Length: 312
Image 1 (tube, rainbow, N blue to C red):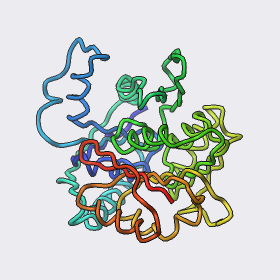
Image 2 (cartoon, one colour; image 1 turned 30 degrees about the vertical axis):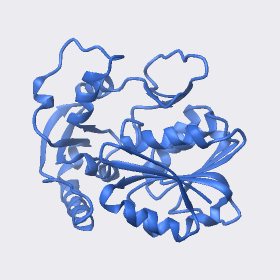
Image 3 (tube, rainbow, N blue to C red; image 1 turned 180 degrees about the horizontal axis):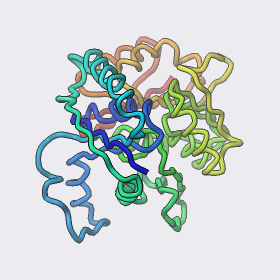
Image 4 (cartoon, one colour; image 1 turned 180 degrees about the vertical axis):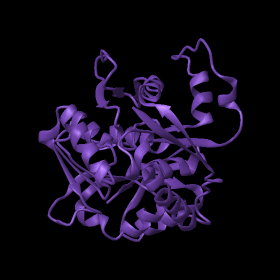
């Protein structure tokens, strides 16, 4: 089967938003190629490389690649272009999306899927969580918690700094028997990890159909479907649903907009973990949630991104 490989030139800070947008137009795969990830892997003493294409470490662009049905390409391209332009316009002054130059070429499905799968390896985050592609056999060490993700992932694999910081903070704050709420759940990785780390229940919400389907699939694939509730919504509408832990790994603009709605679902003394925040929007997020009676307890920074842990 043949596909169109669509490549978008962007930046590290814009890459996940672009990837999320592209999932609206394909179920066949989206991948992010960031030179910083390649350099980090080169420095990772746990990873050994026989050969690296020198061109991968040249230039500053981050490439987001989507694989689209060949028959649908001409119809979808104007829609994709319009969404990219809207993202850039809405993020003006806050997020640098780069050129958003696009290119496309025809590829064989088996070729790109094999290349894409070779990119993923078990990913250790914090002291206990290991993200494992479902096609890789991995024997966990004592105390490790495995979260399996399949080849048809919505964004949120654990590779990006924003997701990784959420997982690190989750391991620090979650207690056995807690209820966890994940707003903008993507692939479901955070809620699934919470259950495997000891949460009795996780509520996962997202406004994206692909993300909701992916989170439901991944919950079942990890054997935690009975402890996860996945909802297609902007935020929980039921104020009676409360959690000791809430997570939101989304853009700062959306976090600021949601700030007044979030405390109603967080138990007194609970922890709110936020990520997806660039430095220029950090103070706006701190102000928005401070105004809701939340107190900053911890702040992490990786790359260009910040994650915050608040207490109610």
